[in-house]
Image (cartoon, rainbow, N blue to C red; front, side, top):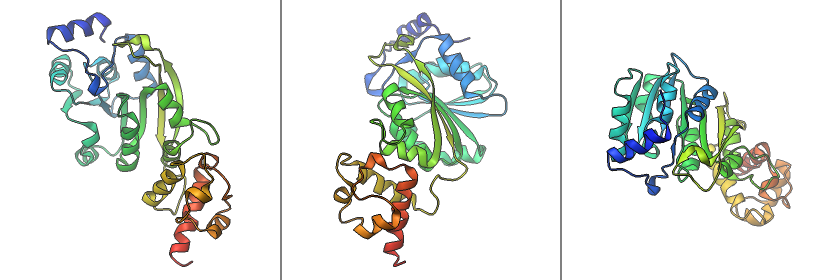
Length: 278
């Protein structure tokens, strides 16, 4: 059983609620869409799933049908009580009232070493959430997230494309990612002004670039993309010496968008070696 558009309207009306823009609330009101997401997630009995921004439970119910154990997190005080009432008879669903950006992963990682994140992510926090999970929650080795299509394209963008940026490099460092489906605005209430897409993100067994400090690596990448239209020798002046570009086999005249994750890695390794006097 999943929610219809009428179900969502009735739940909101019965509890005196309305979608809150501050939380980026756009509730999915199409049963086929949430079942499609659950199917693409590939989860089932024995799997542990964290659903971020569970809202009124449309996707939660579809995920529960798979037999996986679902931990649904919701930030909105009013909505979380409705969510609890919706799933109260489902033994494989538990609800956490909290902010996913502030989530303490230690208790979850203690329960299970392999988590899936499946979520309709609020547009305003999608990028930092995915980045934080990749950086700080190693127990999450798979994500299937619905995000604004423009954000999805940045997540999976290849080098030398307009959408390619620092977040593209971060995801490529930790994981492989692909867009596995488009989602029209018509399946949401309220209807957003943009289309959405489903992105499948699988954590690598080890980072794409070995032997670099992740903090230094991502700082270098963010700095490089800070002025993406300028040559790196100018953007990184004072950070990367001219001879370091040569050692890394990276052209100092290149722009940030011309370097794939491996080229950024060579540049970071060469910088680290220089600082250590190698």
